[in-house]
Image (cartoon, rainbow, N blue to C red; front, side):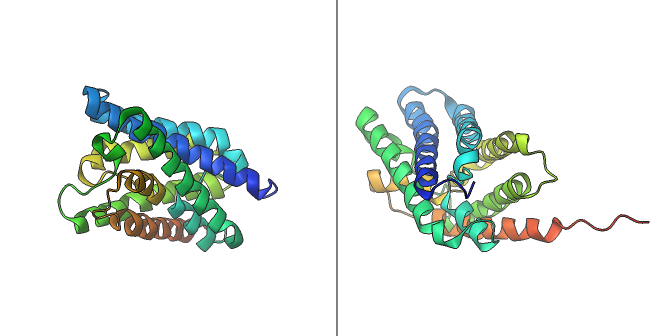
Length: 223
């Protein structure tokens, strides 16, 4: 992956994150307009688009699609620190571009899929931290450990995103991704509690990455 020029990798990240927000937040907007696809459909939209983008651009950029994932990979030395700013810019730009397209198509419906807490901000930040920790644990397993079945990476990551959205989406939005939240917030000017969707995913991604690092070592086989 690192032998691919940085410009191509960041382009892939931008396109991947654009598609993630277009499909996932687009499902929220369409549901607000028509009453379909419903909560389950929205959750499936996020899970399926992540699955598709990991399969499509994973071999080009690693398919982080998420600033929290990029920073956690850099922290655990699975990604060059010097490339972090370019990835973060591409991810936020892709998410913002997708939100602009949704606004042009449908207007400022449902705040373009912006994430907001159902109850307290602190409940949501705790939930976002836990959800992202689980997601990052899965990503570390399928992306950095040669013992894992690499061909299942897209399915495993997409299923984790969809599952999180199914049960936790109504409470915190199940963002797990600062870019996914910041893109709609920027275009719709929905800034209330956006710190939740930066702090929670960043803390969770670091925790999940470190947790996998702690358990990944293989003990010697008994002789």
